[in-house]
Image 1 (tube, rainbow, N blue to C red):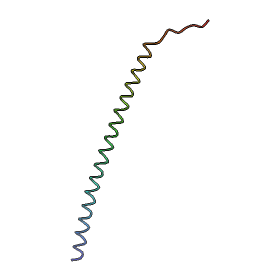
Image 2 (image 1 turned 90 degrees about the vertical axis):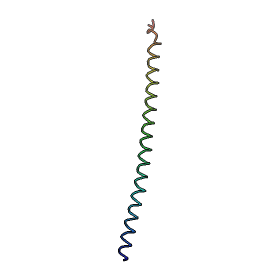
Image 3 (image 1 turned 120 degrees about the vertical axis):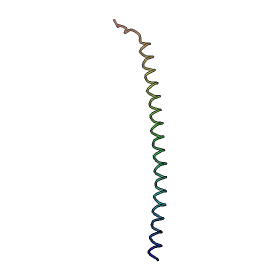
Image 4 (image 1 turned 180 degrees about the vertical axis):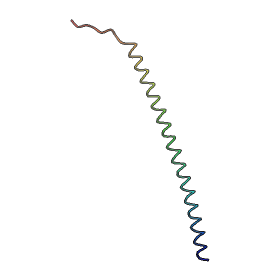
Amino acid sequence: MLRTRLLWFTVGFSVSAAAIGHFIWRDLWADRYALSSQTRQTFDALEARILNLQSLSSQNTNPPQVEG
């Protein structure tokens, strides 16, 4: 009888630990995905701003002046 109680306690404890671990893993995975997505959006916006600045600077270039 003692072995049966110990077995069921061990099974219950293991299942509970696995469920908690699974929920923690899912939460960490969702945070990682959100951070990755946010970083990608930030860098995409930064790249768009850089391209805009480059196109503006190429439009506003003056012809080279010759020093004499």
